[in-house]
Length: 494
Ligand code: ADP
Image 1 (cartoon, rainbow, N blue to C red):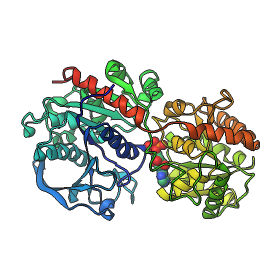
Image 2: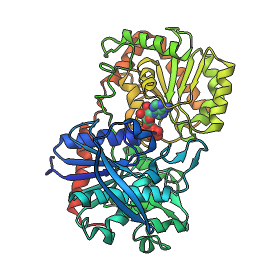
Image 3: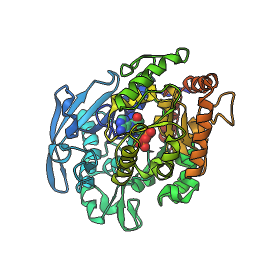
Image 4: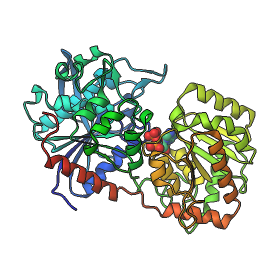
């Protein structure tokens, strides 16, 4: 079904390629253009972090000042047309709040910035201020994750004089584990918070201010990024990190919509970061990428020995506690292991000592490196995602598209996007395991290694994955349908 063109404002703390720590950034750079393709007028607003200075801007569109908590902050808005001419990507420049390294925490100390309450109150308030300055009133204000969770408070603020009274607030949960919890005193940064952050109010959770809860309570429609994760959040207690019952209560407004990929960026046929480009019919060429990858990682290239890779945040969520105990078994299979990612210092140091013990077999690259990630997807034989939970996961879709069958835990979006080859030899695309244990992971790895030895069969598995359609075409329609429903009903919260 098509719907009349809408004005849609996306407010997000990350947008690729400008700022990215994970899948949220990819979604915020690829869903908006997919909506614009359908004729909608789409604006994306995000902070201008210190690390964005390398991007050339169009110059200031507006300079103004915004007062929060009785303090006046000078603000400038810049526009970048780097991504697409059809979507306007606007950035909020506020030196005092954003002009520093790191998005949420200080990379030097690994500690959250203490003024994240002010920083992300400003994101919501400044985004709406831009609309006011331009007299551009969105029908849909679409917030992503807790960083934009205070939008419904500011939408009701007297400072906007009822400008957003007919707008609907739609909210996407990219990861329930991150909730934006602040002590009660933080409310001073948020308009209207006396009313809404009071005990028992939508923003209050166990005496704290919780921006994710606030957004879930007040949104006219809510979604998360895969159908299975939506189901898990409602039905498995620990998955909701305390907010499962609330989602259950809001189930008639809560949807699971699978993310897509920007298939113009993630395409092995055109990817400039690869040593050699290839398609599903020229898969033999892929070995040249494997060779280049091994060389870059200082590992010996051996066509017959599987290279297993991860491109990931190094965190509990990503399954390191089940992987670490079996790394020795994995490499003695034999196989090589490449991990590109950084994060939890404890896991990083365990991985580093394994790398020191087996330098021929393990390479750990503790940095964020987008070009190398492309070569990994295009060169690795298999892609590993033993996640404890996975809201959607984009990496497995990239791996599938690049002909690297994933070995993954059957949870969230991994369950929705990977079909297990052993159960489904006609169209299976990877190897799944259900129980969160080293034993189950080890078993899945063994199955994959066994299949890898049979090149003809392996090619079939690769091709099945490469044939899958992970574009935004379908999901963008489902988002439109969610907007339509939200607009057709009265506002949930007055
Ligand atoms: P999450 O959002 O939980 O981090 P996703 O799988 O949804 O996980 O998205 C991860 C995205 O971030 C993918 O595009 C992946 O390639 C990218 N990524 C993660 N770590 C790195 C890294 N160290 N270097 C380059 N890209 C990375």
